[in-house]
Length: 438
Image (cartoon, rainbow, N blue to C red):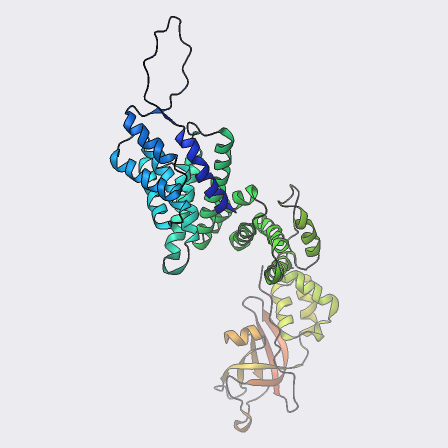
């Protein structure tokens, strides 16, 4: 749609630009009264031959004829006061003739005369973005982004060209602004500058809240690197994109959005309501929010665990959680249950010390985290020396009975004595992973 509008504006500019050239001035009669301030003068071609050549070229309705006339005019009058206007019209004629290389070449010539020519910048930004495929895709996208940013800067000080109706000028600025923001935003997203992408795409979406591509990539930029408030905005726009998408894309975007919502909120509760809201609401309401899920701390996890399990029913990893991260009261409750009581369990052997003549000592890992890290969290002293025939091997699972004597909370190590080999099968080392500390 933007391409169509841009083409229409370029073609519509023909009449406006043609009207900016005044015919050779005639001698005016002397003034007898004090003149009022004169309005800004139009560009004036003083040479009648130059004027006729210019008007004859711009009044051509056939694109090929117009291109021929304007090229001849620029060759014959390279320093004409109407050079920028003629180049701008030539750019439009080449676009009308679907000659993309010459269109881009002429746009660059326009910018050599006026680096802030809005039509030329808009055409370059849009075309370079459309060319972001193949081996030169990244360079074309980068060029489009740079042109878009330049265009936005130029719009801040751009003045309406002489002869252009105010309504047409406002329409051109609005269309160009959308093109510039889109090009700059998509280029920044491709470069993984998500904060910059969010800035430009947010402006683009505010101007056109029905553009699925802009909305989708704004959502991705928000959800990829934004702070909490940008995550909330991203959830709104990914739901909005799901509503605007069709077919398989709708399903994929909806599934992706739901997963992001679930991760942020902690459940899918409210996702359907968000879809309903964004179906008819194009932009986030002023009070829009999504409650962020805050996982319980390890201490809170231990407290919750003790509400459903007795200490003697817990796994070794759960004991470790409570003894190393629990509140003093919860840690004391667990330790009081364990201390001095023989426990049958299984662990993974990290190392075996057979130097003592009275008792074999083993360094064991009881939690799966410590098994993976090859770190001992149990210091077990057997009641006697393990016979050679029964001696286990390092890096194997070990079934034993031991009595907790003491522990160190961090890094966690439980000291156990009176160790004994178990003949009967004991539970395998638990696969429960202790939660990360927050």
